[in-house]
Image (cartoon, rainbow, N blue to C red; front, side, top):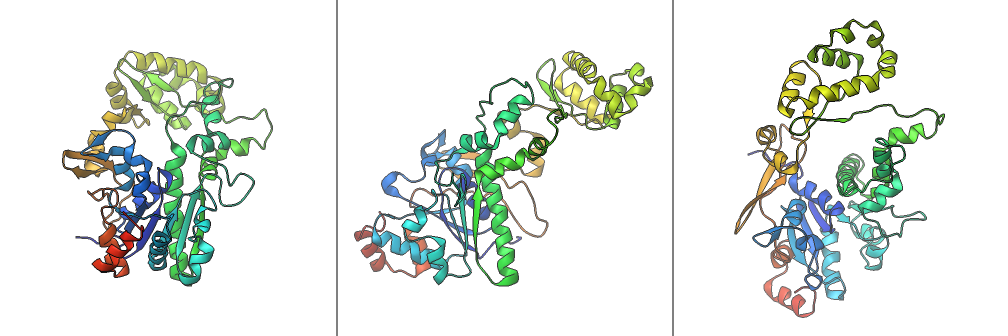
Length: 392
């Protein structure tokens, strides 16, 4: 069996919710030994208790935390903090997503722990970063969406007078986790090349700003200039399809599918400028054409002709989509009451295994085994730590 590319790396995970947890889940998928630090006194990560459950496992928690070990430490006690410090001293990577300053106040900040572990990669994920006027703000995905202009641009790309989008897809969280994963890989390469650890500062807000990079460039230009790309959803007899027309060639291929010989013969429609002048007419005719056909028929005809096309799917359809099954887009997590699917990484490596591990630990399930294996503690020492309130 192929080895996982990050086998042998030890990660101490002080994350909760989604942004940080999705980052460390990616590290676990790649073989890192990820130990998630939670508090039994507070019920652990809030995601344990959110959304639907199967066999006592929250499906959202399982998605972002499968493959990790869970230990319960009381970071409000000196005994618990001492254990955390010892783990961090042995870590290759630390990931946290508290508000800026919290880890430093606990005595677990990078400036302190890097003195005893100089090759440590230490990543902090936050709304606005570790410094700057907004750094100490409470920030969840909707805040980052609003600040970046993403939701406003998404609404106004459809209607210039529309209010900001009521966006219930938490893009900022997942993007921050992905950016954190990428930044940690970069820091690992830096350590490999130069022998130095690094502090990595990842923000949700700046990640979202990258999604509207083109709009930010237009905002610096003549106000009369606007981003003209327009990709409407077309209604069909049983749903919707996307047919993004990105070049003069794709327009001509579409005209052939629709059997519009008049458009094919019209020399004005052979240039981008000519197409731009007639886009409203063309899009209206496409809408009439798709409205008389099923989504499958539209997809089949367009795809056969080389026109980009996709059927708009619902989540339950994505879970059972044949292409995803062949690709192995989903892994399975087992519980006492059955299995549920979780996403696998959106990449594959030819010489190494990556993917979701099928076990999600209960709160504090691995405390004693992790502390025994990583810190060399025997049962008597573990009992003493438990009595001192380090964990429960």
